[in-house]
Amino acid sequence: MIGIVIPAHNEERYISQCLESVLLAVEHPSLKDQLVEILVVLDDCSDSTEAMVAAMGIQSIGVSFQNVGKTRAVGAEQLLKAGARWLAFTDADTVVPPDWLARQIEFDADAVCGTVEVDSWREYGEAVRTQYLALYQFVENHRHIHGANLGLSAEAYQNAGGFKHLMAHEDVQLVADLERIGARIVWTATNPVLTSARRDYKCRGGFGDYLASLMPPNTDKGVESSIGTDSGLGVG
Image (cartoon, rainbow, N blue to C red; front, side, top):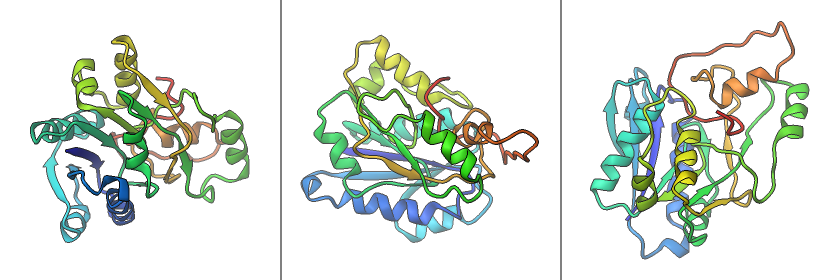
């Protein structure tokens, strides 16, 4: 069984399009003989995220951690208990391509670290976009780490000790632990996901915080709460 974990904290604006894309990825022809379970981990949601997930027939569990590392870990643990042999992770404000899951499996690696593209630069402007694109490596063997585009075998996940209960950079720490045990990691830019560039980002030290750091001085930068969704360039 393949398990997909999606942490969510008040994601009513994005969750539907995220799940629609994940459901499409699950239907990829190369996965026709595979059982796939999707699990949304609702972390202290007070909006309509839970109802929207239920309306789409997707499994969810509720927690009150406001800690993305712990949220991902709990989701992974539940799917491992259900028999998952591969774990894929994305975020509730992210859209995955139709071959996202199939490509992860086809690499036949212990772990796959993918890239992200930003859905719109409207809230940040051309200066931030230009700087981001100058720094980002859209190439094979990049070294970016994103919880929004990560997959690994159950064996590798468990051998590495799983996600640490960190407020941010839990994905960076997991990949460091994978490298420590000698896991075979594929770093690919061939299956990018599309993630939001919202200004109301939810994690200090996460992807939104990284984008905000590229803004010119004296520009308003806001953070909604402490739960994270992604790590910037994979440098914790």
